[in-house]
Length: 298
Image (cartoon, rainbow, N blue to C red):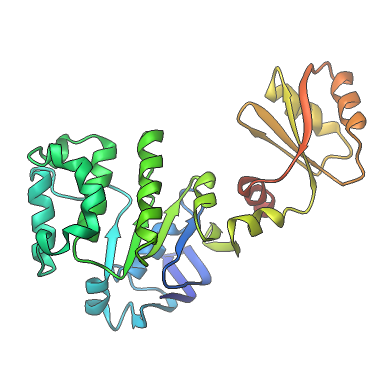
């Protein structure tokens, strides 16, 4: 449904995309996972025909994003990173406007957005600019879907919203998937990757790996330890002199230490005790996608 072939994008001397390639199959919920500045938004603007790539080719439902831009805009629903609807129009007015732009009506396609719009309906006469972050997000998604697109492109849709709204949004995406809608979503949140059928990890304009979420996690090549102490910073500093360390990163209230398989727990505990670190817990764990991302960035 979406095919990206060796796409490059330069802004002067800056290479935002460096020859990336991947495909999104029909009906997939596909995640493009990476931090800010990794090239996600540039790719989305190319797919929506808002930018012309420096090199390579991208197609959506076999339509070329450069040559067939008029057709692309008919079949794609796009939700940009920043809220871009009309702040002075009400919820209802925004929805009616976007339906009219695509030569349809809210009534004709209401069944597509019904589950989402039910949460917005009590606020339908409120101006969009006065909505909360979560409600703005739901309105933007409704407007992106109202013309019954074949492909939905969501650029960091959950950035800046509260955890409850973020969970609600992903629940909505999983419901939309059951209708056969093809969705490409970008996000900087590694835990969002677990909710996708397939993911591509991107950094500095390069694709690091492509696989299912479980497949990505299985690619981690080392033994991984989760260590909780009273002070993460002191723990990280202590591991600077640990000869058996492959890598060490802070993860929330814990530290993740990568070692070879033959390193015993006793060697780790003795090293920390020698450095006056009070260990609260230590255990081997399975790697997450975030662990894999950190490893690949090396």
